[in-house]
Image 1 (cartoon, rainbow, N blue to C red):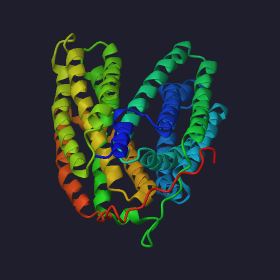
Image 2: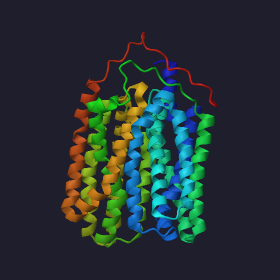
Image 3: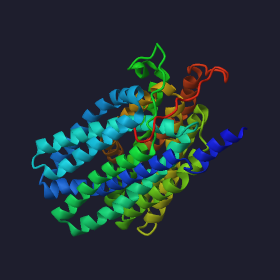
Image 4: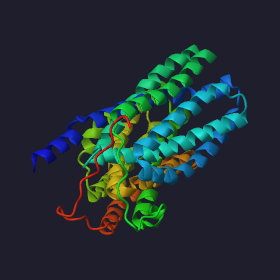
Length: 427
């Protein structure tokens, strides 16, 4: 292995040694601290300060979430055509404006319009950000994305702790400060990226490239559907388990906070370490299968918290969440690897746009599925959920093999060309 290649691998696996990687990690961390500040207290602000009924808030967020899906592929195409940094910075600027506008709303219609614009910007930013990760991450974008997720989780935790202060104060001024701090975090993140991340030139596109060609890539579409379905596991911990603990067990209320902390802690500690082991499509497929098996163990354990004494329930819940969180790390690592390695370099924005749409759609449906089906069935529902995850995971290896088989043959080293040099960082 050449010295240059070993250096590139250390840069991606061993730590964020390059300037662009450090800058992108810092920018994302700052924006996620803002997200943690806002998301934790958002529902309280809209219901107690703006005085919107919770049902109206839920309807507005649903409309916004579904409308936001429309931005994924178009924004990805813009990133492929004009460069991912330009589109990502634009989305951050739009989110700074829409977030600040929340302090001015006084009606459901205004709330829904602002929330919709915010989600359109966020979805577009996700597509462009995914393409930017592919360029900044170099030869190992999935490993870099896994390490980036560590700082995403850490940023949300820091922001959540800050939001607790505002929630305790419970005043309009405190909630307004959170919203404006989140708006400022987008602006600050954009400034960091503008100064520290190169403005990568778009890659040459082959003649057969089409703006919607990702939709004809059946293996990739199948993978996105698989990842969307497996994405139910995120809200298994964040939504389903807290409701179960509160309504069906005698566990002390602090157990809910404990499972959040454990979930975030395990992901922060293991995401980079395990994610660096998943680099090829076949490894991504096997990671999916392993994740499904771990979820098959964790889901029934969560259900059993209703059948044990109050002092045992927190221990069992934390054990289940530890197992589930390890599965989450494998699931996300496999997903990132497949998302990047199966996408053509010149169309990363378009492909990451579809990847984000699939994930967001799954998350939008998760509350209905988890609360409407699993909770309604009780213990059998938890077992069926675990079996569902195991089945989805088992489909990972064959889909990965199919997708890998249908990728174009890479060029020989003699025919390969170097990545166009980035434009100056301030451009």
